[in-house]
Image (cartoon, rainbow, N blue to C red; front, top):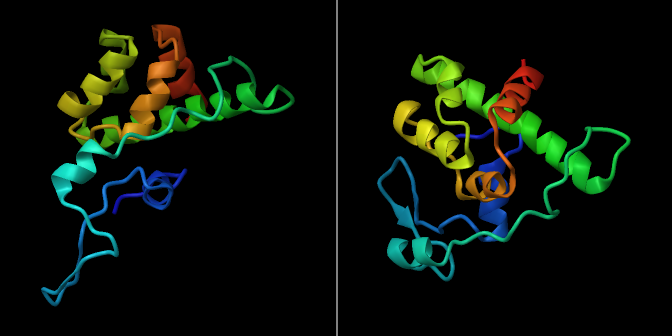
Length: 142
């Protein structure tokens, strides 16, 4: 399981937003979690809840809780985008070719080969993504 600095995969699994799949050991044994459901059914029912706050611009300190939440999201997303670009050997400037939420999602999936999680996509859908927002996110994470 790949983890980011927010431990998204662990949080998703605990919140029930992550599809429940059988654990496979190196010994070839498969242990199904309690209440195991098929992958298809899990994928259909794995819609995550909306972000905790409506989008609000702001700073990481001294602002409203919503503004702080979204400022930290922008900073963390910038770090994730830089890591994905670096791992793919593609410049992060590729993100600016289509400066929208859909563009960021597409570049991560198709050009970087590392799709965003459902929760990252749900958050990005709330953000008015522009070239300026992407540049700020990338600049904050260096």
